[in-house]
Image 1 (tube, helix red, strand yellow):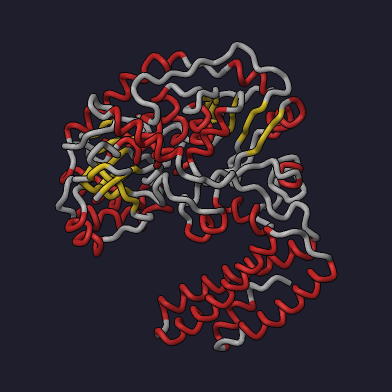
Image 2 (cartoon, one colour):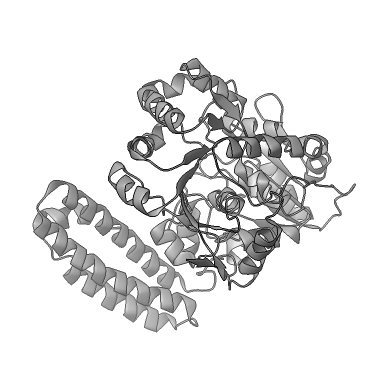
Length: 495
């Protein structure tokens, strides 16, 4: 086996949606969820993949598929399994954590867990995690049977695991911070010029910071960089994702960030970092949105609203404002002055070494070791050779309202059919599920036709209306499936 022309003697499997060398456009990213619902996973995923891509090693992605039945095949085909995690100790991740535990318990090859975090409030109170304690305990026990320690993102998570009786815990932060090696540092220019190009991000399920964003939009060349899968769907299909929000925020089709194709949803870490390197500042509550800037040499600051972002910022010395004890500044210029990288630069090498020691203790090597210089250079060359797509922008900004409406309805019906299919597979015989799957395939082909239309030149309103009418008639025929299924879908059809 070769990797860039070099003979590979080892293969590792890693928990990733995709490797950094694989290319998916916006539609495939949405349909396959290659970003784990948040493209911040691309940043620490690429850093982890790079870290273990030594001269004799190939690292594959598991596509986020993991369960106990896979272990035998992985044991037979791979030399190690690496588990990068983010905020894994949370109720919404419990089922995935249980499947991961099933898998780890059956592993017979070298294994290490590469950091994990608990979703805690800023005061660290674990009451909200009480119901998942048995699952977390079982997971932690499985990890410690295969590895020297549990590695975590910060002190809040460490204290949480210790409260459950696990003392072999090491705080290593996030693997994203290994991206540029041991000697990396960030130097912030003294001033941020008015009109400078900057980026900002939002917590879409809890939007805040409208004054800062208003200042960014008014006084700088600002670009909104969303990170959640729901906004990617919104940018592709024009679906209504957010309700009751502040109209000044970029959460509506009418916002100029979308109407002027300014907002960017990044599909690949290398492109994201290249874009960030051309900007002057980044801010917002999304930790990896700002880490993408910092790793590109651009100052960034986190508006920390929960424990998982604050503990990571504190550990790495990433500039952050604890919004539970103080208000954010009112202007971007004031916020920029708070972006102090003294601690980040002072302790980066020590933090890097702590993670490197853990890696070595468990029998693995990394790409920044002496003797791996050519592997490191080759990794960069291979990335440079990939033809990555540009960031995703809104596709419907100049389309007639009828066209946008048609695309939105098609997407909603497609999702309803997929949900129905999942329910049928779980609760009925295979024939009914196969019938729905056949109809979904037909609808997917029609969606592909709509995707192509979205990417081509704008059709006339009359043609769009005719296309919409024909599509609706065909969809009515398509939905002529068993009565129970049709009723389920009919309840979801837009009025």
